[in-house]
Length: 156
Image 1 (cartoon, rainbow, N blue to C red):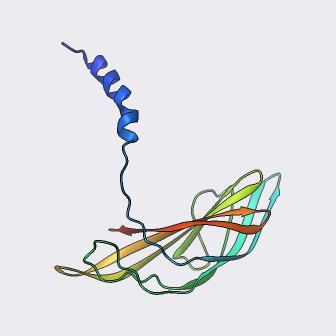
Image 2: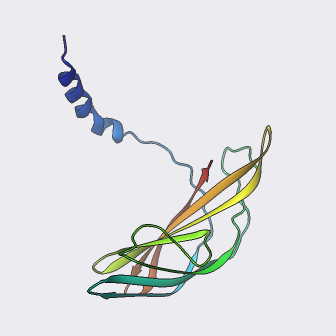
Image 3: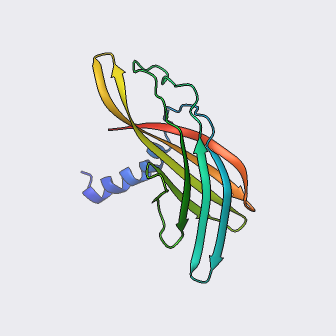
């Protein structure tokens, strides 16, 4: 008979295999968020950042294999500021946009999250949907260098 501790260690030994199992995540290609006027500065007390960000709405997108109506991300134009002391997501001047900066030695990563509500239609009727898109930017010496694709995820 196996003891509970033996079973526990067997399950823990199999955990890396289970975590490495590939899965598919639905991603939609959304147009680029435009980041301008990025500044950062540090003092002995901590680092602060500021940047402007805007998005001009493009064509709406229908999720692949979905029976919902098109998802239409609304445009925005706002300023985001924060410090590493505050940490985590901070609301920008337009509160539906949130940002976070992860400083590095030669670069920083800006994370931007836009959340909006939209009425969507399913095959069985209309519902309210909440959607969020997330974009990461790598900033090197104050220049926008790379955009990692935006990921759209439905919420609630």
